[in-house]
Length: 251
Figure 1 (spheres, helix red, strand yellow):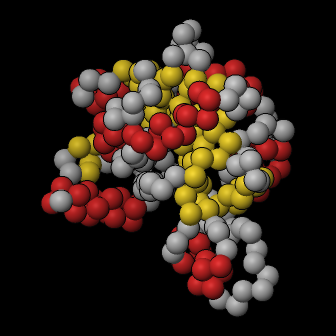
Figure 2: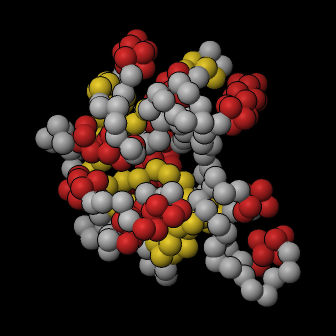
């Protein structure tokens, strides 16, 4: 069984009540759920919440929902809590609750390596950076990976460093930069192993939990996608998401 779990934390430090933020008259968490339902490989979807208001709203639009403790520090801890109770789940997909425009095809692309290769235990997505804004943004993690598409490092800074390029535009033109899209696919045991590990030095420095996996010797398969997504972290992001949704509806 392949189960998608959507963690939804109410008390976001940069956007309080984020899962319930309205986009086109629907709460953001409902948008994410409905987009995830378009996946052809997921057998089921569960939403993991930490607040009664979110629980009630999710129940109302008909999704499976599980209440989790409020004191979890990451979404991965939240999905691991739920995964432990899913006896038949073999593969767990962590679908971020603040990705209201995630594509079902993106989810399937991330799952596929685990179906075709038993050695792959964790996978995630990356997309080529084509704009200066994405290159410069510290809120968009970047990733570099080896010739077998396994992650070497993630950073909030642009990587790799291109020594001989004079401008950012020149760097982007002549070097491939990739942004990380935070959708993860785990074999269940690997998820439970990861969330049992203590935070690591690089993770604390960059504020990127995937670095814990790399520091502890876990391999992450990178799937390069042509699709894009939109993470809503701040009030400004929410306004952009609302405008984007309006344009989509007109089309």
